[in-house]
Image (cartoon, rainbow, N blue to C red; front, top):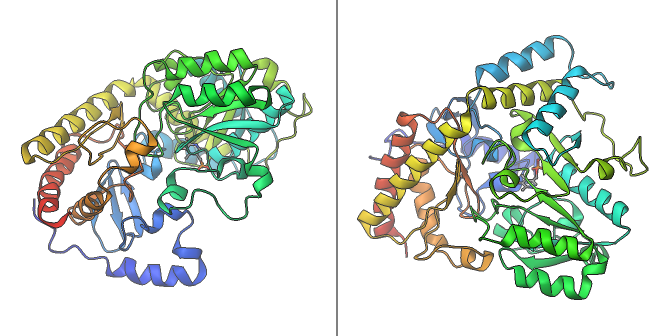
Length: 438
Ligand SMILES: *Cc1c(COP(=O)(O)O)cnc(C)c1O
């Protein structure tokens, strides 16, 4: 597949210059600025199914999908109808609504460990609230997280965080007091011994171990056998809570998320992305006795003007109902398997060392001759080659996450035409990296 001769980003370039004057870096979330791959981010105007269209009229097969939420693709009719119906009745009430009960009941049905749930507005809010609750419930000050796991931008988590902070080469963020960071212990993902060692000395201070059960913010790293089960055992032994951050994986890798796939029951679960149907929603929930500590029934304060917002709840409910009614996870698995096999074949035939780790509709491509199970192995992959590949794909009409440390996502709208378009582009872009990459 040739590079589109009409490919041009001049309108986006002009918009970026204008945006930079009034918005830091021109973007409202750092990864969108393409810092880790360079170049100009296309300004998007419209999405339709698996496709997304920019200001210059370029069309891309979209594997970003707003970093995960758009599991039915862009502008699915069920969500559009539900949200516009809700909008017609008013966009916010500051009072409870029936739809919030329905969304909470649906979440509980999908994830039985979530006996009670509180809706918030983002994944960041969900993780911040979950650790406050864990600290209150245990009376302990510390949390334990994993290097390269991302839990949003709360102060307690910007301690060797992955994703944006990782690609910027800043393990910490200025502005996070060292006293706050000092309450976060950091272990190595997929290395149970590193957790055991920390817990042996600090276990009685640890309110909770928080983990991305599948590490999706350093690409796509699956838990090694025994890792999640081992965390459950260690938490029980030391009286710490186990929090699964399933903001990304929640309703995506399976109906019940990672906890269903790996059969480990966390005490608390953080959710986001897919449950908002493409609108801003997060949630945290879990054991009833813990959730009963949350205000107003309990004394742990947490609130939100827009929490349970009718538009977002309508969108999320429509999305979850559609996923269930169509058994979308089957479709997503097929699409994922097709793309994975196609990419592996191309890498093989070109003799390019690469790995395509995948779980359902989450996958990525590491330029590495061996599988990556830890952050250190991910960091050792060939990033220069990823950059060349990324731009080759962009020019051929495929919108990939602009970093080797971001996961790619598929939707139920990614049909054969879209997947074959991605594979055609990949074949040609990968061939190009053989002459341009180091
Ligand atoms: C995206 C993400 C978050 C943060 O969610 P926001 O809605 O961006 O605040 C937290 N945890 C994980 C695992 C995520 O992928």
